[in-house]
Length: 240
Length: 218
Ligand SMILES: Nc1ncnc2c1ncn2[C@@H]1O[C@H](COP(=O)(O)OP(=O)(O)OP(=O)(O)O)[C@@H](O)[C@H]1O
Ligand SMILES: [Mg+2]
Image (cartoon, rainbow over all chains, first blue to last red):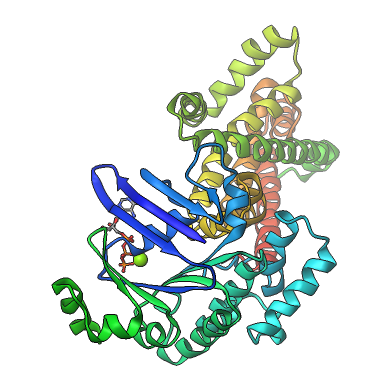
């Protein structure tokens, strides 16, 4: 589904991603963990080209997105992204947040987009908030709307960048619940998170990144119980 | 002191006429200023220095020189040589439009740059193109934030339009000077002129407050 080869990313002098190669299969849930500043966000952002790639290649669903002449906007509809800070549009209602890209990018008729949006709101359990503005929602509700909004584009892959890190503890569960449900439906997902419980339960594979490299990748049980590398052990001993 | 209300009474129709012209010139000035200012703001935010440079100097010139000097320049030099001839009202409108466009451009630019980067990122990540992101996501939010400073700019413009009297545009101040010259009186006409401007700016302030409340601007 996604094949990353020798990905490098530099910001000026600093090399943030040094040589990342990774294959992500269809319907797989890959959880990315690692210390702050290790390049996890940058890696995700390269996957939908919010960040330009310095070197290496990324192939998604048979298409090399790092080749020149790729329609970036079309690619991005196929790769959904959920941010730590939700990034809902505050001047639009919940319903409009979801319909806006469906109408402007996918060119659906308004009423069709609204039907689709209502289905998605039902799925994330927020049907009654359709006409509310984001400001009036709790963090957990905002993030569920953001997930619904990304799903509106019917992406092939969903990227999550610390989706629960900005939430009060009591709201983490509702968001992870929606993500778990998505995984069960067979969505291909790449999730950066500090929620080791989620990684263990939902993840098919856990990738440990440090200092711009993938240090180790294994099924969660193996990685958590028998980490091979010293750096992985050191990191796990801090977070587990 | 003998306050001659009869002068004011006699000139009242002219004052009202002048008030109409003052409002007309300021409204056109601020509208044109907004339209021009929007494009100038976009130009000034270009990542390419060569594109940015003319916009930077356009703004520098219009904000860095006195409005009265600009008015004389346009009325006596620029417009006559471009159009062959000009009228005081046209010169005032052109000068106010250009002058306010520079200030409005800075207001819009500050508004756009105050929007969290995550907004554009999220919109792009949904596949929206640059124009769609600007039109549907950034501009509505930036415009809302720009309303209070735009209101201030409008009030400044309204008062500055009185400079038009210096090139004989028949605004409120023009008729005040006319009355003063005719009767050799200073208090009555100029107090009246001041009062009219005060009424205009206060009404505008209340109107803007009302709009801000309706739009729930924070
Ligand atoms: N736009 C940028 N310009 C310069 N440096 C950047 C930029 N974005 C990220 N970096 C640097 O790249 C490194 C990796 O950042 P990144 O956000 O990918 O880390 P992370 O693993 O997501 O960390 P965290 O857990 O704190 O979110 C950091 O040192 C950061 O300072
Ligand atoms: Mg990060």
